[in-house]
Length: 70
Image (cartoon, rainbow, N blue to C red):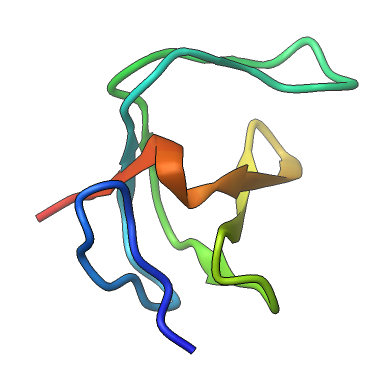
């Protein structure tokens, strides 16, 4: 299963990504601002979602809002 970011670049476990849009996280007070770096992502069973840790919380993000960091 290939998991791709918003630009079509392949993502793998442990990659770092940038958030390309300010996001409000449902059920939480967390707001992810555009340009936030998220390290050490984990792939899920869905090719459209990744799991990550932000502020000691584990959240699931859609890959359409992520860009792989070089």
